Image (cartoon, rainbow over all chains, first blue to last red; front, side):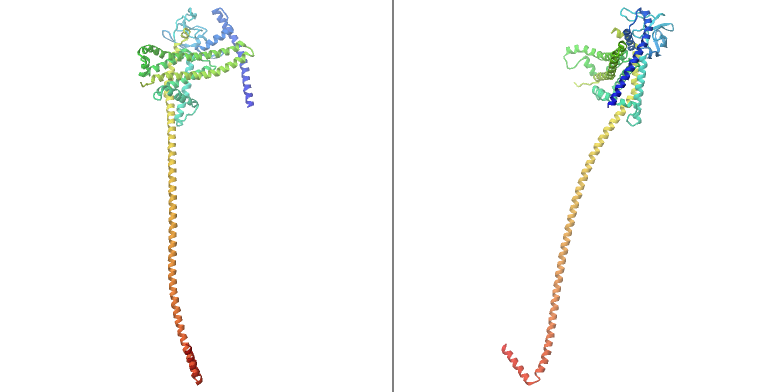
Length: 367
Length: 166
């Protein structure tokens, strides 16, 4: 027992010192990069960035989708750019040189905005103009590029598919008993069926929603978990992703809704006629607010988690002291564990609420 | 809100929607369908097995009860049979005793009769012999007595004495 405790303590200390030296090393690198960056920024803005601003910019950059798959310091893969701008434009993101330069394709010039990471059409100098509110005013082509998020979505989907199709095959092979790595997830599949789908939707109708509920739970959970790896992807913290998920929930709710669902919205039974007229628009608005809340909840939770986590890690570079380093490491460590919980919790909440909405759509009242 | 809209990437939205719907259909065909079917089958199997086990237990109980009953009946039958046998034995012994007694009595009677007969015959025989012997002796004594005068007289006298006495 005593030895075990000592072992844990030493491991912790080792990790701490390792992390510190690494952090110092990183900050050193960062400074060098800073200088390079500063010079560039200098040219464009005419002012130098402090370390604090640099961290802020890094966090912001991390939160956004990217056209490069950035892995480590200077290791990154270019990704294909697909634009629709009066014809298809297809080229490698290496043309942008990590967003630092203008890319030319078929006589059109494109540049990446540092603010939101989107591609804008520019002139040959690659200057992006900003309006009064600080938003880009250049023309924006339809960007169907395989971005970092798209790559991670494909990878995650592939992992989910391989895990669960493997599990499904093992059932057939072993006579109804699962085998292999997917087996760990079998209890979760059963949990979603028994504790989420059946209580919320009901024994009679739950089956047709199972495919969606299972897929959305594992998709959000896995994607959230990938967000916590050093790969630094922030998929569910992107509003386009949560919008897509929420709109699917909305569409499924709307298109599988029974007569009773619409009756409860437009002509609420059991209340006086004037109230029915007042309730109808409220209820109708509610159908949009529900998936909207789903979208914002997932987006805000994941984004906030990433911001706080990265800010605390950023503190290490700011403090550069014996107290600050370990302190922020400890905080980041604790928060990381919390984020692991949040990753599962958000997937769970999204699934439960979707099931709840499906339940209200499939419900048949007896009045 | 403006910032959110500014950050919204329509391309990413399209990719996510397409990939996600594709994933749902792929998983439906290759994962969720088979998995849920297998799990349902397994659960039904477990339920059936439990019901069957309960049924078997019930049957076992019935069999045990039956066995108990049969055993009880057999025991009762055995007891009855033993009792019958004992009765039969007693009867036989009783009968035999009676028979033997009757036979013995009969034999005894016959023996007694035979003995009586023998005895009568023997007594008759003895009587005859004694009579013969007496006659012989009387003959011899008379011969002797009557041989001389005096003795003859004396005899008469004695005889007369006897008569007087009678």
